[in-house]
Image (cartoon, rainbow, N blue to C red; front, side, top):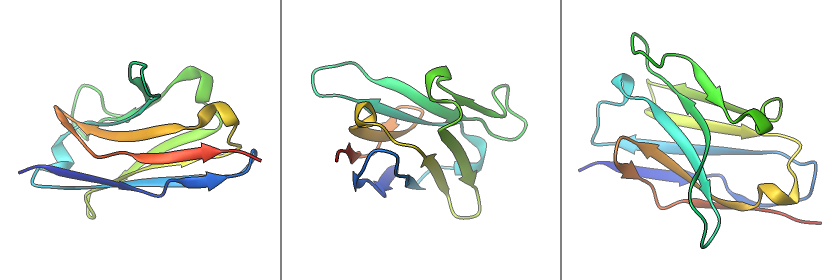
Length: 115
């Protein structure tokens, strides 16, 4: 059974930083691409960032163009974890952030950016 567990969300002031983590179990983590989405209630999911696996066609990282320079995605295959470093956060970044591998989703972690 695949489990994805996100953590690291919280309340931060504008301009602050957060690092989200997603721990995966029950899946061969190293050979899968991984993505972070964010979804506002009632809206569709927005792909924030993705990271491919070594040797795969999508090897490398992709960040939503509007977030480049502020958001960075990385992975640690030894720990079965993927990270989303978010800097210079803005109120419009407030959302629930989800980790995704194939058809598997975590429960989400809420990010709130507010003064």
